[in-house]
Image: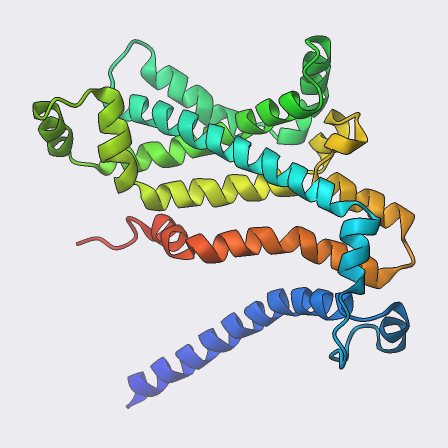
Length: 278
């Protein structure tokens, strides 16, 4: 009886803590959406704490059309998509090579990738900008190359651990059927590490989508700027229009949330893989 009561109390305390953490994360997002659906007068009257009785999409219309946020939005979609694509292809090929191939200096090169994760990313922004500026690759191309480079180390490490767990018998069977290394990587190994790929995609998409410091340094042309830099421009021009800013922030947050909801099952599998033994 004592142990049963102790278990129930522990579960109640644990769930209470988890629910409180979840509410603390959800409340700011819901407050932001609620505020974005109000007029500025309604927001100033209740500070966004009361649910809006009348849904108004005027703030979204002004943000997308009046502030040209749609252009920044599609820029970010393009940069995020192409950067994540490059990271997935390059990191999966490199991780497969580190896991399955033997070549001189393999461990040294792999540890160099791990060591790169210890360097704070902002520490390299200025020399990176100077380098790209000298070879005339600032703006779009330089930004994609820089963000791809920053996402490779963690992605290679994560994918290599999954490739190491795959049985060699699958590759042997594929070789008997006439598959080469590239076809084995593409048709056999990649589908089996889908949970790890989901983690790589979400982590890197989040990093590219939310990057502000490097983007503010890299872009010199206004029409090429990504969404996060565009949001700062909107904020600077409309610092007293709170509902317009909330609508702009909601536009910036929704795509990543939708991406996570679409891939959450694979994402959770990727994070919990190996946690259960036996």
